[in-house]
Image (tube, rainbow, N blue to C red; front, side):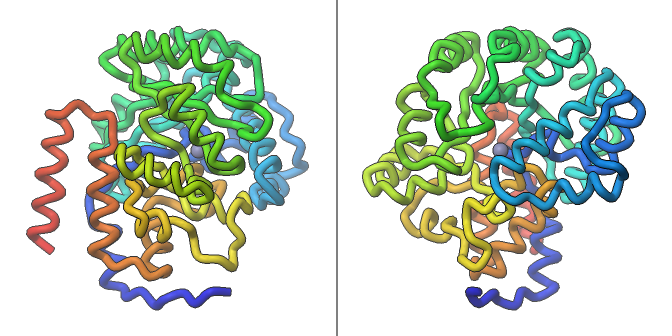
Length: 345
Ligand SMILES: [Zn+2]
């Protein structure tokens, strides 16, 4: 086990207090196991667990495939417009409690459409949840419609969903690619990404998490991804690292996620240090917080324990703000708030 550093309460407090944004967090994966259990009971969905406690045990992942299996099971419990509205409202409340002003949340529409909810009802529910989250908690939520690589189910309904969401005052800001990375290369999704871009959507893709550098090259060159989810295995290819650095392509890094899915051994420091030292554009995120017993604050504290100074973490926080897909005028408002915080503390 590598040596963790002591972090003072003052630093932990400051990391909590600083205004933040988050750009890689899955709405479904951010929903607590208890809420999932309650939804499943309410909706008559059979989870393969005999009790609430047994369901909690599903969240101790043996590997990445087990994590995906649990994620899909959890998603199967979500059925009604009320479920989705409540999930977004609760999400905004938890983000606000961490001083997160703005989130770009991934959603997996393929599973929800397959369970029978219509595109319009789903967008209404996400919109209503985001409205009340903003009104009641002052934390703004926008969405990225994430395609799951491993399933054909409703694959061609994701883009129409995302475009219809974009038309609703930018409720949906982009399209993404997630799920099982090995054995599902990006080529078949290229036409969808190209059409999404023409329709005004941003594009992102998970890559370089469980697969190697060729997957990140694919996300960039085949899909034209503007940001890369995880991307940590880019370190295996110096040419790719130079490309990411020179083109200022943000990586959405989530340290505790990588430890929990065993992509990185728990007794090793996270490769984010090597990425930062190589000059790569890095952002900090929680991915699926209750599934990985974390939240965004804890991600920053984790990095402080691995030797990052407050100044370095503040810079990562500033960089994460700049990597959002917010319009320039909204970004400028948040930038002022960030500056005011820095001046005050
Ligand atoms: Zn993710």
